[in-house]
Image 1 (cartoon, one colour):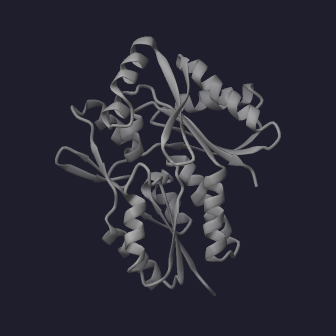
Image 2: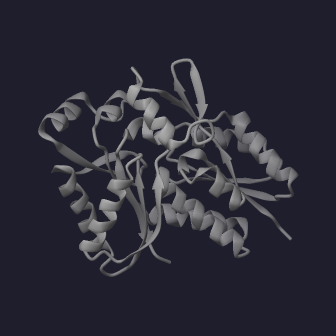
Length: 283
């Protein structure tokens, strides 16, 4: 029987336990606080990370896995009997992870299909879950890859940072925008576009209105087609519950896939108490 391996990097934010239970090989990114280096989701849980982040004098740095680390994962799966591998990753526009995986694939003992989801966190997680579902149903490598790609291409990912401070420090937002948002209590709703970069969807006064805008967007999109949806938060379960309540109040038609955490790498830029949603049409 043909065995297909699935690899994901840690920024899918599913965590090592879920990934191990579903036979997905995780390759972690790294987070550095000064001279200390931590493996995302392995050395630092999300809650531990946000506690360190809030007292750190400087923004931590992040780094992608090396090609050698990906190659070790691919070789391990080949040794376990996998004849092909599907490797699913966060947006190449914001990280060198996809490039490292691509470089490693040229030396892999078995063919590797690499998917740039152009998303992060729970949006990438939905792609991984789609791939696992097809693999477990007996799909071949092409069908597994296609499931991940279609999910990525049809998914939406919106998030609301509590502050733009971390995006500004990390070079993902301008200083003027961050200052204005802070002074005026403006909550930008950010979205990942088709190229996998971050854009502003709307700017709203206050978090409650921002969450209501998100819920209204999902309600509108789900009027004709129900959605499969995940809610994510950066150590803010209360805000995740507020999002769920807003979705229900808006009459959104959705199946809740999960309420998940944002790990250290994505949290470095989103900051603590960010909240968001990832969803795609239910298939």
